[in-house]
Image (cartoon, rainbow, N blue to C red; front, top):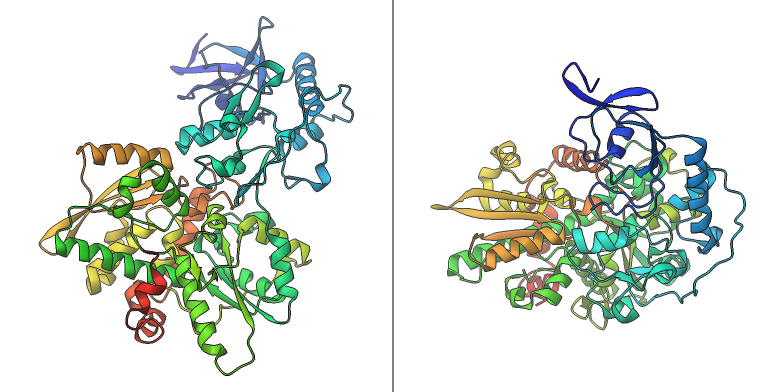
Length: 568
């Protein structure tokens, strides 16, 4: 019998399970509540079938990879037999035979899928000797570290880099037992077209590619009595850090973060969303000025995402005049903090003020070292650490994060609008800009704006909003492959936009490579946490943030606004 109540079904371990459009057996198995092991399968990527951990056994004894086998009505399979267990243990043993096993000092310790599976299958000994040449680590990048000795050739990083990000900085080289994942001609990753997005490190199941750890230098500054350490916290961090401490996904833990930072020795703590309010004002003014002039170089592309800016510099230098001259919110707030510190130092014993940015993004580690992101003769931001690095700092300090009482950020930059907070999710920049260009009317139409199409996780969203006697045509794109497809359509004349928001990571900063890793599951919860923070904010529009108003009337008066808030 191939149908039950006119539905297609297959039999898994003796139980009938309906087939409801799944593309492979693996998805049907997981729907049935069976956690079949995998190392190389992600639904967002193409099927590679390299690790063979997901093999199943057919009723005639045939062995097949469930990730690459489509389901058929009437199919009968087993997922757990002595033969399959033997195969999986052998596969793991062979992987470990050629894998560096310095687990205790590995960045991925306790977060490594290979380690998890070895424990799950009770692998206590490896009988085989290493058989490949052990290569040197590549520490040339400012954002990621590469250790070929820990690579299991699962191909996750290769497919992420080429299929989702359209970069292709790494690929397979050589054949058979000599196969490697490496760069062209084995050059340092920093000399390739890598854009520092870090998504390869986020998806790597082992420690072969990891996020650069910058905590040692930060701890030194925190312990230095002659250094004032000022922290700023990106919007997306507040809805992801809780994942590291078993707090429900999407919970806004901003107050706890502020409290933890103070207890670790930070002198002042601010919200990068305040910088985002400045970005909204400057970027919207830039757009409106272009529209008034009838500038034929539209659309205006956002410049908040350093991985996107780097991608444009490498692949589309012809578009750089279209990219906003605005610095990112992190750099804008950093410039304000440094300028304020310089003014406060007059007549006092000088102390070094170092700004630390806590970001969901690995490309920020690259951005802070750009020549156009400086204050005087030094980087505006001294350290950029990720959400995961912050979690490690909290653990190292011995703080029980889940028990910490929340506290508010410091003044005088202690107010951020809801428009600034939603920068952390794809479409958030656009929604904030729409609120600005609509002026006072926006506060009466917030719900209408949210339903224009700017929200959601589609790789491309198109929005039209009224503007003066006409309308603005806007595109929101996340994922660099989606951005490239859109650029091709714009350049061919197939589509026209006035404003384009680009985020390198699919879903925006909530899915940045510096966050606790998710492919799809936690994105809706994190997004909901961002929009809830917006709803709870007393100030909805960037232009109505009293901190921004005070800055423009004071510290940013005259030409200082452009000098401090723009990079060109």
